[in-house]
Length: 155
Image (cartoon, rainbow, N blue to C red):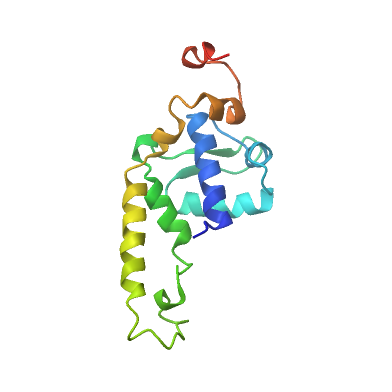
C-alpha cells in the first residue's frame, strides 16, 4: 500500500496549518517548508478548501488557515477524501475491474476488512494528535519561530 502524493501533501499542509494555528499562511511558504511544488500544493489546497478543512483568501494579503479546530479534523476522513478516486485493488473498481477471479476470489473480502481496520485506526487520530507537543515538527514548520515553553527544555 502506498499513499498518493496528494494525500501526503494534504497532510503536510494541514500539519503546517496546525502548527501555525490561527495564522494566515502563504502557499509558497508552505511549499518551501514541505519540499513541495507550489503547483501541486495549490491543487491540494483547493480540495482541502472544498471539503472545509481550510479557508482561503486570494490576493495580496491572501493565504490559508484551518477552517476547523484541529481536534475536529480526522486523519481518516482526510485520507478518504484524497484516496477515494484510487481503488486499492482492481476488483474494488466497478468500472475498471477485468479480473477473471472476481467471482471466486476470497482475497477481496480480506482486503476490504484490512482497509476498514486501517481507516478505523486513522479515524481515531486527529490533526491535534499530530501537532500538539511535537517540538520537532514545530521546528520545521513554524512560520514565526518562537520556542514554546514545552519545547524550550529540549534545546
